[in-house]
Image (cartoon, rainbow, N blue to C red):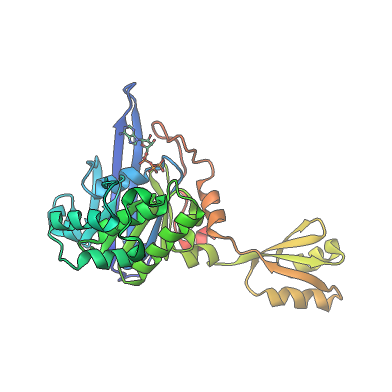
Length: 330
Ligand SMILES: Nc1ncnc2c1ncn2[C@@H]1O[C@H](COP(=O)(O)OP(=O)(O)OP(=O)(O)O)[C@@H](O)[C@H]1O
């Protein structure tokens, strides 16, 4: 379990599996024994390359598609069997909702609010939550794509859900639109809601996600707190020093693993970079540069999903199960 014992979970799946039949009658495993854990509160990035099974998993969680095997819980309630008990606590965007282009954002939301029996003040509340308050009285068709997407998010907030699930909410948006959605997700997570956001583009999620699950070929490759995945364990250190070959010898003698990379050294498994400086100085080798090469999530993601092609595994592509856990990934 990637989270400390006792962590309250908003979503948990175990051994989730879904196979489709292709038109040629072959089996395509979309989700293959997925064990997912989403802690309660904050933003959780659900990451994987195209075709890795994110949408299929989300659809199963929401009762839109049937799992072949496995179990799923939302707030500890078994779904889909008891989905009606928790559905009021969940908001989701899986496909683009339809709005009336000639109506204002506010009017579109008011119609939806009436349909689901939300209180009168809900519309103003959700417009404010997504930062559309000032543009609420303009027609939907005049909105930018980012604003349209924020209106869709606002619609999911009408019933004030505790869990929000957004499938690729930034698809097709420009950088400004992506930032708007990111800000909205961040503020929802800060309010204590659980926001699950799927994406195949890491950079869009890394800045807002507190925790992530990375999947490939329908399996979990890694999960945990972003800070642990990118910063856990020891990081390689790049050292600029005169006489790199001699310096490498000194460090190897001190027990470090060292590669010479041109004028510089790359030292692996460094816990205390100051010890390197000291060891070299003792031999009259002076460090010009010392940079800790902490991986960012992009690097972790690319390493984990290397070889997980985006075409989707047609019948059991032999993807090795990468060990899950913060330390092993960094
Ligand atoms: N209705 C379907 N019939 C047959 N195969 C499907 C169907 N839906 C999805 N698949 C296949 O299942 C695999 C997983 O697809 P899924 O859409 O869940 O992935 P994804 O991670 O959400 O990808 P993307 O980011 O491209 O949406 C893919 O190989 C896809 O082609």
